[in-house]
Image (cartoon, rainbow, N blue to C red):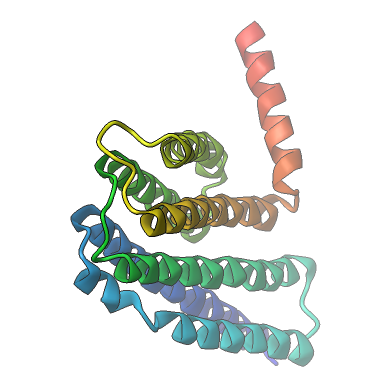
Amino acid sequence: MPRETFQQELDHLVGDMVALGREVEASMDTMVEAMQAQDAEIARRVIGVDAGYKQRGLELDEECIILQARQAPVARDLRLIYTVQAVTNHLVRAGTLSEHICRAIVDTGGVEHDPDLASTLSEMARAARNLFHEGLNVFEMRDIDRARDLEAADDKVDLLYSEAMNLIVNPSDNGGGSPEWRIRAALIVHYLERIADHGVDVGGRTVFLVTGERMESAMQQYRERRVESDED
C-alpha cells in the first residue's frame, strides 16, 4: 500500500473518531439541558443513542485492526492507531453514561426533587461536559499543554461530587426529595464523575500519542519543570 494512501486512511480514521466524539458531546449538551430544566421530554432525545455509539465504536476498532494487518505501521503510526482505539472506547463509554443519566431523568420525572441537589447536579453536569469537550479538543489539536490543565478542571468535578454526595446523605432544609430521586441522584453523580474522567483520559492518551510517554510520567516531568522555574 503506498504511503500516501495509508496516510489518507489514517486521516479518515481519526476524522471518523472525532466525528463520533462530537456526536457524543451533542448528547451531553442535551443531557445538561434536560438536567437544568428538569425536563423528561428533553432527556428522551438521548434514549437509544447508546446502541449507535457502540456500533460506531466496533466499526472503528475493526478499521484499526484492518489497517494494522495491511501494512506494518511504523512506531508513530502504530501509536496513532492504538490511541484511536483507546480514545474511541472512552467516547463510547461517555455516550453510554449520558444515556444512563437521561434515562434516570425520565424515570424520575414525576417525583419530588431536592432543589439544592438538583442545582449541584446541573453544575456538575456542565463541568463534566466542558471537561469532556476540552479533552476532545486537546486530541484534535494535539495540544498537550492543555491536556495538563485537564487535571485541574477535574478537581472541580471532584469537589462537586463531594458536595452532591453530602446533600444526598444529609438533605438540605428544603427537603431531600423522594427516596427514588436520591437513589438515582447518587447514580447520576457517579456517572458524571466518570464522564469527566473519560475527558481527562482522552487528554492523557493525547500526551502518549504526541510524546510516547504515559500521562503520569509526562505530568511528573511537567511538575518538576514548574518547580525548577519557580525556584529560578
